[in-house]
Structure formats: C-alpha cells, structure tokens
Length: 190
Picture 1 (cartoon, helix red, strand yellow):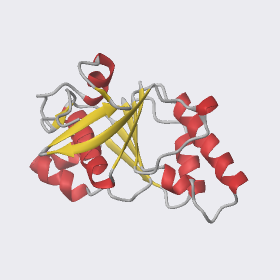
Picture 2 (cartoon, helix red, strand yellow):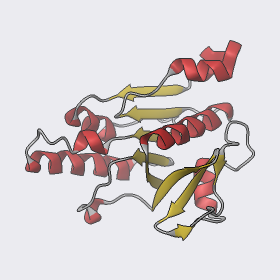
Picture 3 (cartoon, one colour):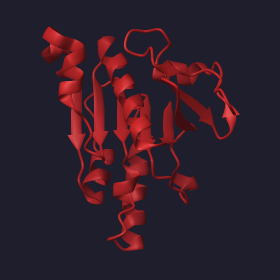
C-alpha cells in the first residue's frame, strides 16, 4: 500500500515519528527519506533509553537538500530487508521555484516512478499539495491529516475514515506500543 498524507508540517512530523516508533518497536527495519531535515535521533533515543543503539540501527535515514537529491533518493533501490519506507516532505524540494518548469516536471516524474517501484508499505507526507501527475500517481490513498486534541485524525477527501484494514495495517493497529496517539477512526467536528 502506498499512502500520501497531506497536512500541516507539525502534525505530519508527529505522524512520522509515531509511525517510525511503532515499526521500530515491532523489530522492523525502516527507511526514512527526508526532505525537511526534521529527524531528531535524540527524540528517538529518549524512547529507547539503554536500547537506543539496537533500535536506531534498524532505521536508515537519508536526507535530501535539493530537488535533484530528492529525486535520486526516491528512485534508488532500497535494501531488501527494509519492511516500510517513509518519505517526509519530498514535494517542496521537487517543486523548487528556482528550477525551470521542465526540470521540475522531470524530477517529479522520476520521484513518482520511484515510489511506484517500492514493494513495501510506503508513507509519503507533504504539506505541499501537488497535481498534474495522474498518469504517474502511485498512491492507493490520499489522506488529510489533522490534530484533534491529542489525537491525529486521518480523513480521505472529506470522507470519514473508519475501519480500513489496509490503512490500519500500514499505520499499525491502535493500542500497539508506540502508536497510542494515532486515531484511524471517525473524525470529530466534520
């Protein structure tokens, strides 16, 4: 399953942290491709305490600082033992206004094609919406993310997001260690 989650940066960062914590607590190896340079190893170390090294060794982090680096990261082959991939904020780099439109389009197409080739669950977050790439759109779901109280709520284009097994499988089941904050049920106030 490939999911694109749109929302505010702060809320998306929390979602990414929750997702990574949950996967690491389950003993999985996860790849994080960053376009916003917000990964904080000290935040994760505080959760893992004495076992920090054991957990953080299962987290592969790659950061991009330009549109070209992001397109290259998104199209690279991943290690075979990675069980999930998170790509945080790729589109603000890929739609760099300093690049000519033809080059932005080429880089975006390269990244989207790379997403399509990823064979494990993929979570992409963005506070920058994108359009015009329907032919290459690899996402099975596009969700909106927002904070309600202390819970993260996910909705799909105005629909309430109830018990979608694929999404719950990707994000984890509520109540599992490390994911208590994520709510995948109906949103309040809509």
